[in-house]
Image 1: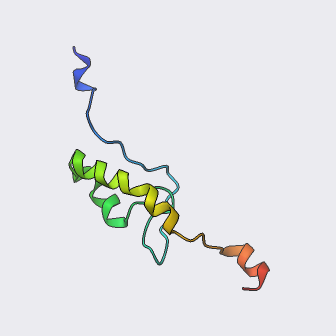
Image 2: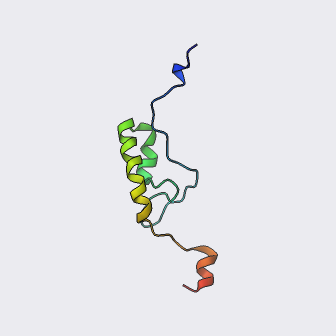
Length: 77
């Protein structure tokens, strides 16, 4: 049996298992993909995946950090 079966030329998912969708941007704050990209990931070509992965660093800077929960309530905002 050959190891070729287990060797794949696929772009791995950028998911880091911290899934939270930013309510305004509709982007996951863990991997920075859109909900549509996450849902379609398994059906995308390697080229489409590479294009998305290349865009992710730009998206990270565009998301404003949200302050919610207890920190927000305590600050009185």
